Image (tube, rainbow, N blue to C red; front, side, top):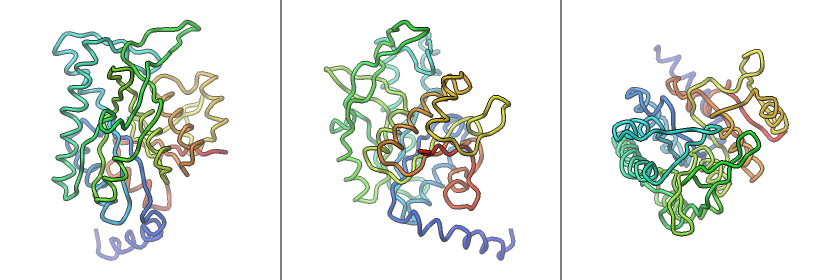
Length: 286
C-alpha cells in the first residue's frame, strides 16, 4: 500500500479514535475467529491496538469447537436446544476444564504475544457472575438443560480493577450459585457484562455476516421491536437467538450500541469501530 493511502486510512480513523477514547467496548470472541490460527492472531492484534489507542476492550470468549473436540475425545454426546448445550455433570467438568483452564489461558498468552497485558478471569472469580439453573422451554414444554445457568447478577469489581491497571480482561463464561458451577452461553455473559459496565459498545464476532431477512438479504440495522418480530416469525432462530437477546438486554441496560459482525473477515473489529462504513448488523433501541 502506498504511504499516502496509509495516511488516508489513519485520518479516517481519527474521529473514531477520539470518539471511543477512554470508552469500554465488550467483545464476544467466538466462532471461526477462535479456531483459524491466522484469524486468531489478527483478532487479538486488533484488540491490542484498540487498547493502545485508548479504548478499554473486555473480551468474553466462547469455546464451542474446543469443547466439542474434547467431548468427542471422551465419547460424550451433546444435544442442543435453541442454541443452548444440554450440560450433564460429566459435560460440565469438561466445559470448565476447557473454558477456564485451556481456552482462557491461550487467549491471555496471545494478547501478551501481541504486546498487550491481559488477565484471565472466569465468572467464578470474586463472585464475578452469580448464576442459577436456567429454565428452558421447547415446543411449549419445560426441558432440563442440566448445569446450564442464567445470570442473576454480575459483580464487575474485578473487571474495573483490571482496567484501571491497564489489563485487558479475558473472561470465561461460567458462573456459580447454590454451590454449583454452571455453563452459561457466552453471548448472554457478554451482554450482561456490557450492561454491568455501561459499556459504550458491544460487538459479537460470529460465523455469519450478520442477521438476514426472509429473502436472505443482510440487515444492516435492526431495532429491538423488529428483532422480536423476526424471532416470533422464525426468521431469527437457533444460535442467533442468544446473540439477539444479549444485544437487547445490553441496550435496555444502558449500552449505547450493539453489533453482530463476521469474525471470519480479517480485521472485522477495526472495520466496525474505526471506519465510516460499519459491517454486519447493528441492533439499536429503535
